[in-house]
Image (cartoon, rainbow, N blue to C red):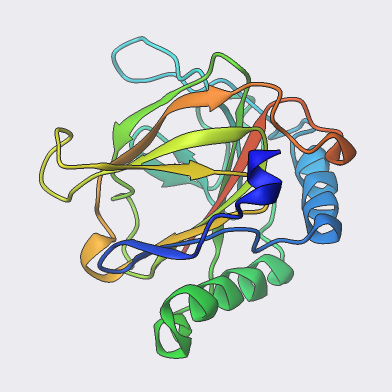
Length: 216
């Protein structure tokens, strides 16, 4: 009810980092969710990511365009079933460019085409530690889209995983873009608010679709 009575305002969280609430309308959310469900199917489907130290990420992931693994990219699911990574559709590039133009202005969207998507699924207990998106060879802004449960998105600084940081509430349909001086800022998800997804979406949990330019 609070979300309906008091819509979140658009906000610049840091230089080059902008939160745009309700960027995806209900129909676009449903369409994107349907696409994510298809991408999650094997082969090269949703997997548990294992870290070099032997641990596992609690958010599960599927990739498009290039397959991300700690800490690089490959054309096959080298840490999973070995299948070729699913292709990155042209319509996701258009979506990414529109998102950047809306958040940061048209000039910021004039980069090379978006060609990588990381789709993370969070259940009620999943988290994402503070990290930087630094495995790409392009400084193009990162585009983040949220579906389903609301989360606490922690956006930090470029130097350290410690404070200062800002906690932002990301709801279903929200857009978050970070580029320029904030492109390599540490960020993570310390909490997911279970049961907060729009009932009409038909999703239990949270999906985050992150679009990147590989520069390769």
